[in-house]
Length: 337
Ligand code: NAD
Ligand code: TYD
Image 1 (cartoon, rainbow, N blue to C red):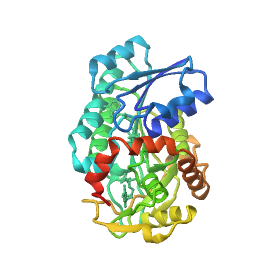
Image 2 (image 1 turned 180 degrees about the horizontal axis):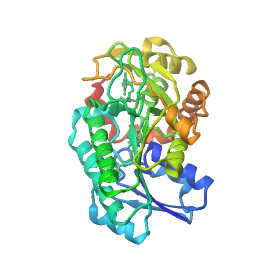
Image 3 (image 1 turned 30 degrees about the horizontal axis):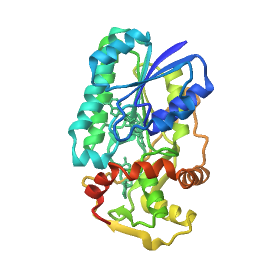
Image 4 (image 1 turned 180 degrees about the vertical axis):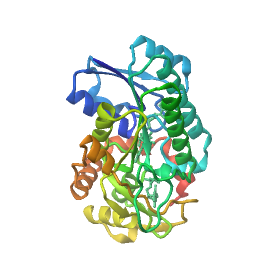
């Protein structure tokens, strides 16, 4: 049995990972430690609820006493750290909680991992640590780190701390740096769900700047299969980029969503640009493909259609979210449009 502490498992990507891995394997015992911030939602984990090899613990990864207690109680030998504040716009509105959860929280986990001699510590990171690309080129694992937002700088700090724990104490740390994810259960603040939900509600679609910023999109299941591959076979001390070679300017995605939902492009509204907005991300994932045999399985056209359909069919899930505290954030970020 692999006793794995999965943190942030009630969020978009972490819940997808837990549901996937517990469905596939019965040699994993998963303890899900999640603070249930605004982004955490236990409804995402219904398929895993009640399984005998699954436990949920509500708590903060910054709570060293609790983390140590869990390592001891559940004989934790593996860690996958998804827990983080994850939204760039929120990090621009206020950075402190990003530093706390993403940097201090990772440090707390690493300290326990060191004391309990874990056999693998996977830090889930992001391509945003590399900063912004011009029109050409791809991020590789050796691209210099140049994070530009409070979010990405906190993730870069966590990556460096994790690598230092490998170098200094021999903690078997591996890092994945993935590009932008999409799929079911993504919190409505992110580009794709926000645009789908606003379209369904006939609300304006706020496109930042000229809409020509480029992101490299990957379906969440493909990301999690890469996490699994790196967790199982990644070499300690190594970083693995994860992406599906699917670069698109934001405006193209917005137009595609409108088309799929048979709505008019007049809903598009160009708004003031995000401060410090990274222009382009694009990932070279040949290392994980060549060394670990992972490759993305989903085509964008099919997976985005599935995703749009999921939001159409699961209004209950997102209506509950957008009617609550999210309204306050939406007002602050977008005004009354
Ligand atoms: P999310 O915001 O949907 O979920 C984050 C989860 O972490 C939530 O359940 C939240 O309650 C929990 N959490 C936050 N702070 C915590 C704390 N202090 N203690 C315990 N739990 C806490 O985020 P996501 O999109 O699922 O991202 C998961 C991870 O993947 C993050 O580390 C993020 O940086 C990384 N990542 C995300 C993307 C993306 O496109 N979304 C791409 C690459 C990497
Ligand atoms: P986002 O989903 O926030 O991911 P990230 O900033 O981490 O890449 O945004 C994706 C892209 O979409 C990014 O270039 C910013 C842009 N964007 C908009 O144009 N309007 C919006 O309302 C949001 C949330 C994002």
